[in-house]
Length: 189
Image (cartoon, rainbow, N blue to C red; front, top):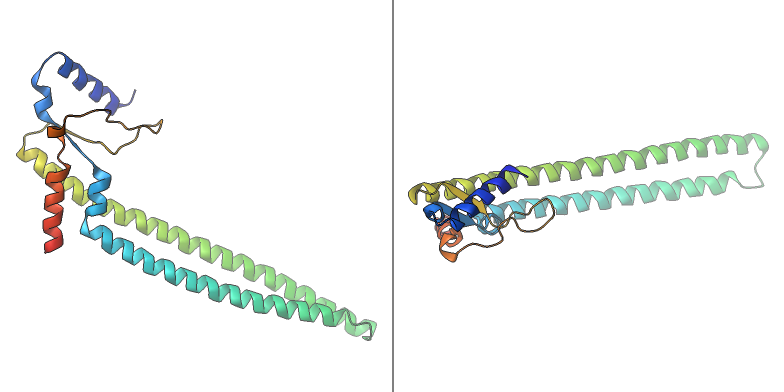
C-alpha cells in the first residue's frame, strides 16, 4: 500500500473513532486550480504558437521532400530510356542510386528533426506545468497554514488503478474555491 493510501486509511480510522482529525484535513482539486491559473493560459498560447511553427516547418519539409522525390522519379525515368547507350544508362543509374540514397537520408534527417522538436515541446510543456503547479501548491500551503491543517489531499488525483484517490469528503473540507478566489485576484493584476 502506498504511503498516501496508508495515511488516508489512518485518517479514516481516526474519523470513525470519533477523533477531531477531520478539522485538520483539507482537499483541493489541483487540476482545476492549475487550469484556472493565469500562467496556464499564457503557457497554452505559447505552446499553440510553437505547434503552429512546427506545422509550418513540417509543411516546408514535406514540400522539399516532395520536390526531391519528383526529381528522383524524373531521373529514374530518364535513366530507363531505351534510346540511351549502355554507358550513359549506367552513369544515369548510378546517379539515380545516389539520388535515392540522398532522398533516404533527407527523410531520416527530417523525421529526426521533427521528433526532436516534438520532444522539446513536450519537455517544455512539462516544465511549464510544473511551475504552475508549484505556484498552486504554494497557494494551498498558505491556506493550509492559515487554517492550521495537517494534510491537504488532491481530490483530482488518481490511484494506480485509475480510480479517484479521494472517495468521499465533506464539502467544508474543500479548499478549492478559496484558492480559486486567490487565483482570480492574480488574474485581475
